[in-house]
Image (cartoon, rainbow, N blue to C red; front, side, top):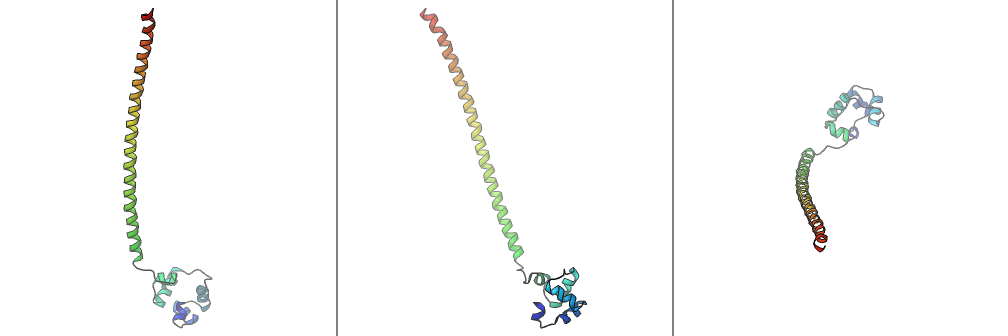
Amino acid sequence: MFRLRRGLSQEEVAEALHISRVSYSNLEGGNVRIIHEKVRLLAKFFGVDLEELLLGYSPDPDAAGLLQTTKEGYDVKFKALQKEFDDRIEGKSAELAALRSLAASQQKTIETQEEIIQMLKSRIPKENA
């Protein structure tokens, strides 16, 4: 792609990289893995960034910043939602504790009323006799 844009032959590029034309042909055709330093040489030779050589396009330099800003925004929203959830759980836990206390109080009242009923029942036969 870059070689053709510049109107270069495979032989010319291979010479610049100090490799054979066959090796360059294999590199260009994707038949072999490129060694790191050769990739840098290729990028330098074509006058492009390493990313552009490997990806086929030059990444937006603001993309990383935009990604970081978006992540930070989501982090803030997540923390706010987590706090809201924790607050709601705490509120519901307090409500549950109050209901348990009320139920225990009601149980005591019922037990007391049952004791009073039993006491009254035990007196009724004695008074009627």
